[in-house]
Image (cartoon, rainbow, N blue to C red):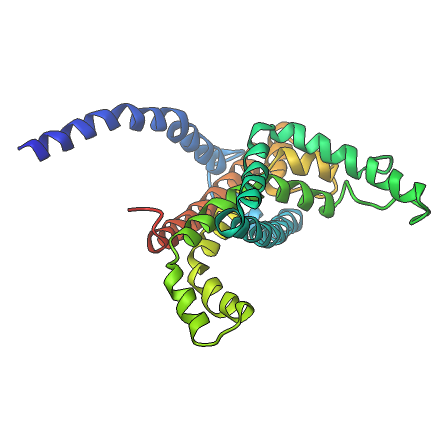
Length: 277
């Protein structure tokens, strides 16, 4: 009886949260779905446009390409930082933890403008390279895909650290010692034992970063300068500048379905990794 009572109490506590989610997310989402099939007339015309419009398809391809590059860069950087955080010396652990936590204290808007100040034609990097005579003209480091990738990677890298570090902490050191005892060198132990045994954390980190990257708006808008438009920015342009609510809503629904599918994969990989029990 006590177990049933605790379950009922848990359900009662969940009701306000479920109502909040329904009011804050569910109702607006159904409104967007309604726009996608009623603007400007009833039907699935906007979804047909979504699959046939070259501009929309190009933006989706660009978005997936940028997200893929950002995911690879973030996971590689996060793996190195996680390794130092989990298995480094006390000084290395403190420095790694500092590098992980500090970015969370800075807003995404501040970071984007900070990278703009660094990467612009008159920014610190180009000015310094020109002052030492390394380049004669400024490098195109911003208002393109490169600037977007740099800014997004900087923002998302800390999120990739936690699942990777969790997988590393669950690794039994006796397995590594056994491999060393059999005569394997440190490099071989790392690539043939350590990396495969932390692959679940890498997959979880990759999915987290990719899902987050799909909905980025501020960073691509500032660092892309309108030349590297991603899906979220395209939705904004269709809704508030072109007044094409139907197509903008259809793009939003399609993006949400993609994120939902990726989130289901995320939960599937996080369970074996031990993050969800």
